Image (cartoon, rainbow, N blue to C red; front, top):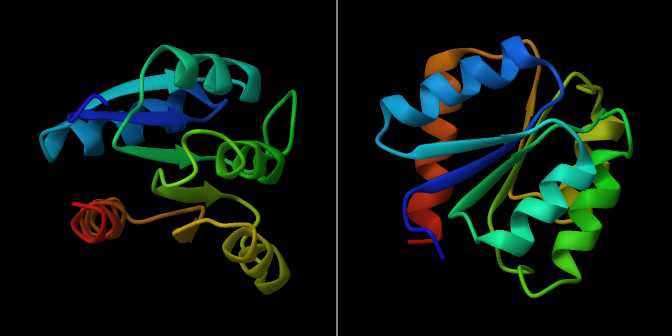
Length: 124
């Protein structure tokens, strides 16, 4: 496990870069995957301390990725869903599928930072 790596699964380069800036501000390295396939391949290479996962990706639904992670050797990996799907049913679906937190876009950078730190504290 890479003790300082956070995997960001986000297809928007601008949003991914913004999240990476927050991650780096709190002292972690970031790796960006723009598709679900890239994310799953990245998890085969190394284990991050946290995954920040978009729900809407070009090749698969974030819930499908979440379920694959939960069924793999990375089942205990903390995952925050960060997505435009902010309605109650989507938030509940993400949490019920195994997300440790769920943040709707648009998001506040300070809140994102606080939630990342909170999830990491719980898994430390």
